[in-house]
Image 1 (cartoon, rainbow, N blue to C red):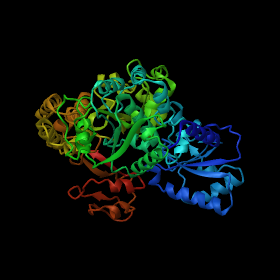
Image 2: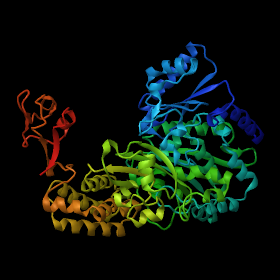
Image 3: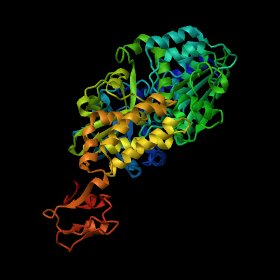
Length: 622
């Protein structure tokens, strides 16, 4: 166990060594090669890049260069990413075989490897991270340490004010002071509902019980969402410290982090961080030697989307089937094992230490009147800069998609954006200037959700998008209540008929009535929000529904029964590539002569169009 004085000494000594991470003018002979070791870059061989860098440096006897694994830098579209500090050089799409050249050219000769320098969307070569448009409108609070520190090194976390907030709370603030600070900051739950965090802490604090619990919801189940995963992979100690602060505040001595088993890197780093914190006496029976007791354990989820609902999560921790409980009672009154329980998600906790250290007024000065602070989004779909972004509340959708996201690939038009995952709604182009905050999104029929933001271009069929999300919620329904179990299934059947060309005008009315009734009568948030993608697409894209049922037409050419694959004979050169790659032998024609597609055999897989070098094959609506 380490005293505060020992922790402070680690902070001062390590910060001197790490000043070059944040100070591009740092006076140092040492260099740090930062390599993203988040899930995305790991899948593109970043561990091998780290291994190669270290081996080459050792072979060449270079001792003043350190290779550091970090969490996600955010710009996943450019991964694997390598940044060299203090000069802040940004290398993109690095491969393991590039390591030798980077060491020889950049480290030894002092020249930049031009071919690996990152290029912005406009083709401009960017030599430094802060020159990228992707980062210019971002403000990192929850992601502050991601891409900066080694998440498996507690000393590096301590160097950047780690566990300073916990010590401040334990020695300078009463429990009421902490609750007031969190309340005054205006922080709202980042898990989707947006409930005021300070109120939730207050409700749990006032409950009288000999045993209370603190729980972190890291069961991130929305398709395309990876905000919480990236925080856990890049800055796990921030969650541990914030949960300890929450434990002190509400009077709990035990916490649980409920995390998806599908997040192996996050789970590994959490385990490493918890063990390090225990070794330093920052978790356990006598934290900082001043008598405060708080322990933390991990529980793995089995991939059930419904366990993102807080009471279903509690059931799962208790070893039961993950099904939501009827509320009230709420977890603050009767939660885990029947005891008062505080539940927040990863991103919510990630803000706590910064609020404690910088003050409630600082945090409340960011964002809008009713939506304070920043929000992390997993930006994906048809957008150039796929990745993780953190922006002040009130930033418009247009700024996120076009300024930060770099716009739509291949010169296509923006059609819609889905916020909130399966629980959210589709936002059309006419609402691109909508500020991203809780109230504004609700007014246009969407919701913040946990932070998934999927961009769609003109090639997407909105009826099929609604069908896709509903198919997900049907398969993830726990089956406890009839409206969700049966109602969503009936909605899915109607949407499937429409996409197959068998829908009727009456189906549109049935779909809307079912959606409204399911929202009103489902037990938990999954069922109550499941109709949102349908209702929002009916609101903004009803003409596509009418085309599907009246004209038997899919304007996007996405629904297979409502389109055909056609060869433009004027463009076809008879190269035969399409025929060679057709999986069902539906294409016939002589070499150097225009080919034809047998529509009775064609499965509309679009392989032929992808392979055609002359762009002679396209989808046509029937």
